[in-house]
Image 1: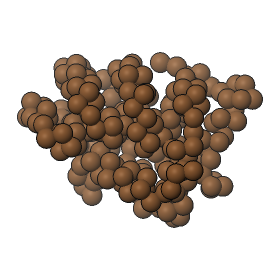
Image 2: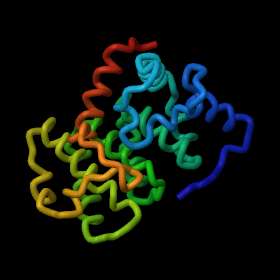
Image 3: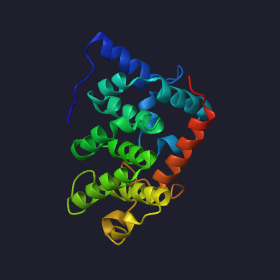
Image 4: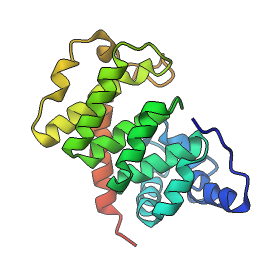
Amino acid sequence: MSIRLPTTPEELALVRRWVVSDLGGKTGRYLKLKGVGPLRDRPERSRFEASLAQDARRITDEELCDLLGLEWRARLTAVWLIGLDRRTQFRHKLAELLVNDDGIYLDWGYFFAFARFGEPTDADILVAYMKNQSSIVTRRAHTKPFALDAVRALDEQLGTDHSAEFRSLAIYRERTSTAGSERFPEFEHPITQMCAWAERIMAVSPGS
């Protein structure tokens, strides 16, 4: 998977604008998109949410493509912006990245985006991924319960029960943080909660 850092003036400007930019804050936007970060209370949360929602509408498809070709921080930000604005034209690209990307924080973004897209094809993509991953032990194992949560979210939207065949598997019942140790019981179904959060902030922020 690409670990290419931005090098050209255009790439550096792109990263500063969409990945690092957070209304002048000292913390890069991408850091707030790791794991359950978007759901956490933080200073100036409303400003962060408004900026993120506006940028999800403003960024062009070409800029998103460029970010997806860079290292994990750029990809993470792009995936969240794609999911927030429901850019379903990126569905097949994200499906390819989900399988091949080894970025430790990226899975959360992919699961969120597919759940946010909310169509039967997205459920098919995640079910195929889960069937392939259920017998594989990798450093991404800690994110597998959240793949199940994404499928649950899609089941709720579509009136299906794709998650049934995975609920009895131990690897999908274990719930840990992206660091593999911190527990967060306040986020019982984080992908479902992220979809509700996305619906709220995208409804509040007007298009531009």
